Length: 195
Image 1: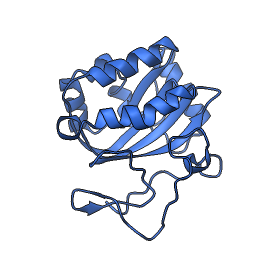
Image 2: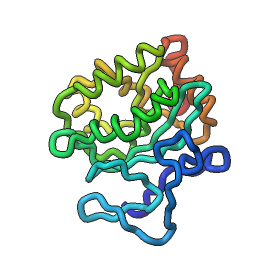
Image 3: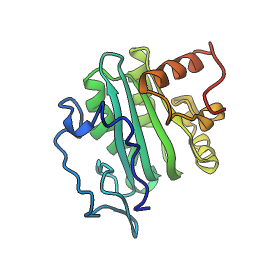
Image 4: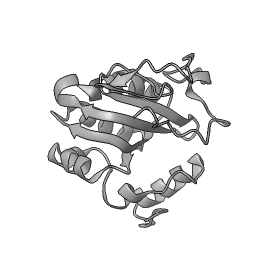
């Protein structure tokens, strides 16, 4: 797991640690010292801790004018044992929403398991973004994780599955990702790059 780095192609345009409006502003990272881990596996030091024992994130992009953010996730999403959604919502999402973000893309291809409990925080998140004409979208969810998300009934609050699980987002610019997802989620275009 130590080889899995957060996506870095946009770092010349945006870094969360230099963004005064970001919940990760001022963080410093080592390229060599591996201090964080998921269970017994060390992870790359560029991932951001937000209070969970098994789930990490990286804020790849925040556009406050467009109200849009992209976060990459890593680890095991465990609401049963660690209430990960509470930590994510309070420590990352709420501060971003306070800055005007209401459209969230979470890249979930490195979320290895999901263990749901209840939907209160997801419902709260959905209601808050809906008031601002926003949404929450999980892309590239692994098939068994998608099954676990469905069992918890998160499809009532979050877009995921189908073409969203095959979205080739890496070669695209963040602004185009927003455009493509808005077209797809509104039903104006049912195709995504890579599908």
